[in-house]
Structures are given as structure tokens and as C-alpha cells.
Amino acid sequence: MDPAMAIEVAALSRQRAMEEAIAKGDSDIQKFYCNSTVFLTGGSGFLGKQIIENPIPPETLITMAEQMDEDRFNGITARKYRENLASPRAMYYNYGFETSTRWLFTFLTWFLHLIPAYAVDLVCLLLGKERRLVKVYDKVYKMSNAFSYFALNTWLFVDKNLEGLHNSLSKTDKTIFNFDIAAIDWDEYIQIWCIGIRKYILKDGLRGTAKAIKRQIWLRILHYVLTVVYSYCIWKVLCAVYYVCGMKPTNQIKSKYYTHATQSLGA
Image 1 (spheres, one colour):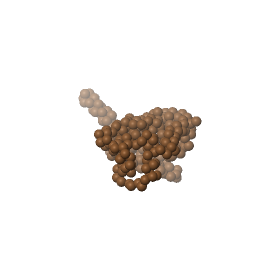
Image 2 (image 1 turned 90 degrees about the horizontal axis):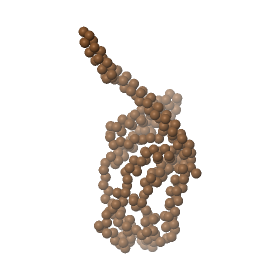
Image 3 (image 1 turned 180 degrees about the horizontal axis):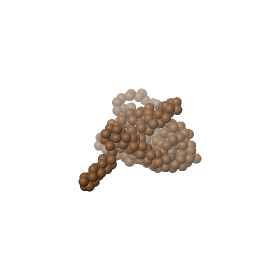
């Protein structure tokens, strides 16, 4: 079985506990909905019966959010995830950068996305094919800017009501409505996240993972070679721009300075 498909099967098998709990029919919430008139109110009012029967202690402290490990989310770009779960439809080496610096983000966007996109679209224009990369990367840039406000700021979530609601549930309902952050396996969570991208966005059928991993090795070598060539080309273009604008590279300025100094000493 393909490794990606095995992860999907394992994740689906863990849902059996929830399905079995629902099948038993001893959920307090199920009984409440089936045998009572439900009045929707603000907050957790839809569980009014449960809260009355099981009062929430006001001194209850929440620790759920503290279980969220930021390093796990940073691990999305880690090699063990992006390479071991590579898709056979990947056209290039899977890699990424994370930065909280605005100017570096703008530089990387142009250096890694927009400039190559314009170059590829120019080739497509000359070949009479549809130009799409610039539009795609422009959407990615706008989306990243929109999310940056939430990703680059510190947020304090007061979730006492959430903890109290979780404590008020019966054991069966905790299995059916499992929203305890502390119970999440973040390694598994990120793997499923990657599998979801492959299944619902790339739609590769979760097959060919082993072949894709081997392909990533060669794409990685190609990436390093192209990065050197691409960086050299960018440097030559910048040198040409500086020369045209009268801002010659520092090595030429130093060379003239040394020549002038030598002539002065010779004189």
C-alpha cells in the first residue's frame, strides 16, 4: 500500500470510536435533541440542559490552548513532511521559507515567485500558450499579505468557556465531540493536512509516493544548480542596471582607485 494511502486509512480507522459512540445512542446531547425542544441562545446555550445538570466551576483554568505547539506548524515545511509525502505531480523541488520580516518577504516573493513567473509566462507568450503563473503567484502574494496580520501578531485567546463546556460533557459526548486541543497528535495532524492537499487539491489519487520521493532527490540537485545560475543572472542584470544608471559596481570603483593611487605613487 502506498504510504500516503496508509496514513489516510489509519486516520479513517480512528473515527470508528466516534461512530461506535454515536451508534450506542447514549449520548446526552443526542437525547437532549431528540426528546426536548431546543432553544438556540448565545454562547453555549444550546447545551443548556447539560450546563444546568453539570455546573461549570468558575475557577476552572484552561490549558487546552497551551498544548498548541508552534514548532509543529513550522514543521510543515520540514523535510520529513514535504519529501516523505511528496506528490508525483510535483513539477519542482518542494521547499519553503518562513520569515516575519516584511522586506525579506517582498524580496523572496520577487526572487522566487514573480521573476520566474514572468520569465515562464514570456516563454508561453512566445509559444502561443496560456499565461498563468503570474496570476497564480499574484494571488498567493495577496493571500499571504491578508494572513500576515494574524500570523505576525500575538493573540491571547481566553477560552474558559470552552474548557468548561468540555468538562461538562459526558464521556460519550467527549468522544463524539472531541475538541480537546491537548488530545491532538500534531505530527499526525500535519501528515493528514498534507494528505488532504494531495487528495482534494492535487488529486493524485494518493499513489506514486515512492516514485515521487526518488524524483525529489533529482529535483533537489536541479534546484541547487538552477539557483546558482539564476542568482548569477540576476547579479549580471543588476550590474548592467548599475552601469547604465552610472552606479558602477564597487569592484570597478576600487580598481580605478587602486590604479589612480599607483599612478600617483609613480609620479
